[in-house]
Length: 236
Image (cartoon, rainbow, N blue to C red; front, side, top):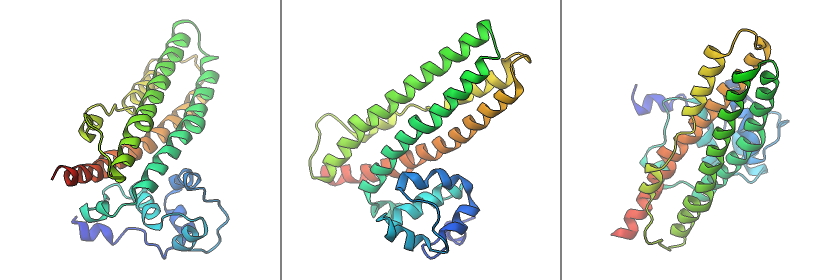
């Protein structure tokens, strides 16, 4: 399928936002990151963006990325990206992950652990504690090093000794350990561990993992190429 064919299926600004949500329920978790509230009736995506002072082009891009697995913006679309909207969205996603997703998984893991004992009880606790620490470090690096670097570039400033390739090379894949956690819960916990609590936490982990995959895609395939083009302009 070529790019033109794929674009026939994409959402458009004139579509009702309610219809877009009904097409992909995962976007329900995206709305709060733009401070958009439910209850928008028959209003279009464009109308809602105006109401909430949201950059329409970027919001539409996020909706399409989260919904259509083969979709990525082309070079022209990336070059016209509102980088401040993107960075703001990534920061709000970090808060959502820590305060909502990870907090929920931690709570459900504790419920599940209470049904286990001994070695399994301790392994789950230690594993997730280390994972949470890695996520915090990952987000802190982006917010304290990468994002300020990009904002400086936007202002025409350059930072000697730093390049976006360093971010690419050190961009830890925080999704991988979620796969390990899923395997522990599915394969290696004894049958005595409650099936209900185990299923509940697995659903949360799967949903978090899917969201993180989209988050990483936006960083790797949209943010990084945009910054690379900015760096080229300064190097010429």
